[in-house]
Length: 339
Length: 300
Image (cartoon, rainbow over all chains, first blue to last red; front, side):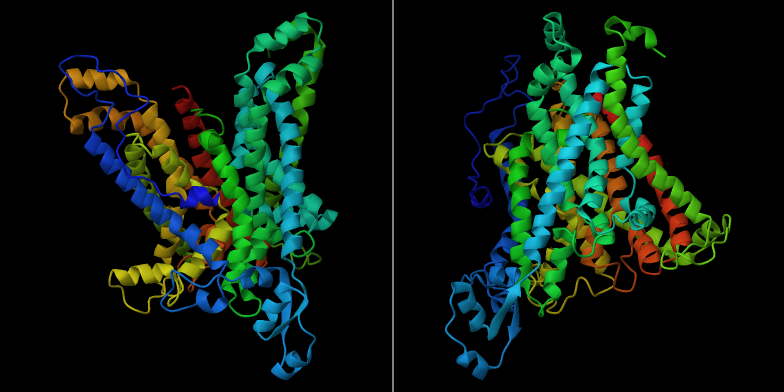
């Protein structure tokens, strides 16, 4: 991930190009689809300037995680600062301040992080809640992804292969649920969860995220299923497979890439979701997005700890974005645009 | 409707179809349609979620009258509209520019087209949190960057009521320009080369080619980007809740922030439900257009 972020891009216009189209007429020296080398230079430099500026916030927040609290609030801001792991230590621990005399009386620190904490005139009090919240994000993310993929695959297969009455209307209805403002349905869901005891439970958020992701999962998977030729299943069924066996043994393996892609999209959504998590959880089942902002509040303005938490939270998403890069367009258009 | 078509493999296919579709439909009904009707019911009452035992009074459309007659709500809707217009204009201009440049396929275009996309996949709430750090008056790097261009020493993007709306426009643009770029790049790549060839034979200038070929062909994608961004930004909650929480005062209080304050801070559940239904109708109308448009672009 870091290598991608930090790679220097050579701003050179290419001599060779892969997809140039041969000129159609002798009179036209350069094909209109093939920009001049000056145009490419200009394009490359413009995009690189935008790209560098838009990546600065990400690089800066990752760097802030490795700074001391003093360097993080230095005025004017420092580009280079001594590396420090105190942000990560503070992220995972709670500490309390002690008087210098009491600190001197303590036995020498046993671990490197305890030593770091002592340097700040503090002693370790225990673990923070960050690891729990991160784990909640993982459990709820993977749980809801699994459910929405299983249900979505079944529904997508049915919509792709069978003549379900009113198919287009159902598909339309499914997609339209994606467009609902979360805060608008949050009121009754809050009341619903309160009355059936799903408030602040993992199950509650898993169910909710499953439903929110279903629309995306059905639409994306239907797109992938439509691309698998029906002849494969028909051939299998001629060979004596039942429809169910053909689905399991022929269609599912063919759809594996599509299922994986869809799963990553669902996972990223559940991982990033904030509004429902904020309103429906407070402790046990709270996920990272509502928790990370509260890090700043604990013990003054601890920007390095916030940055460290943000870094750990964002890295998986950055990684998966790079993995998904060829499919992102499909994801944001619900499978409508495939290229 | 088309029952006869099923007979080739008998009832098993039909049964399977229903078996496969039903769980999805049931869940969507339970978590989307049922709550929606519940919201409509609540909007007709004086219910307060923090006093569940209190007497419930049917108030008819009084909540709707109060929402629509409330000047503050209109002020918030205006703030939302201004935010929408500014952020989406910026995103479409920047996104289209970037897409045009990336479509020239310079040597590193593959790397940059991925690197530029990164911000749009991040959690908006967390983005709001760390931009708060960049906007700090003294040690924030955004302010430091502005100072390089001669901005005053003490500039508080988030505390100054004339600057705070621009802060959310700026962060939203940073985050979502890549989205517009990705859609428009697909649009540019879907233009059949023969159109340019024909334009070339007609000796059309580069400018004419842009206005007569590129722009009309990309237009459906621009409209799609506009619709999707409008819907998403109209609903936007996470980013603003973290970045400004609607403040200072209520200058950045977008519609969804108002809704959260009414429903979960002031606990005026009935009133907030009416507001929710009004917002829902507005977004839903747009969504219908967007989905139809998506189908249309799909035909290409």
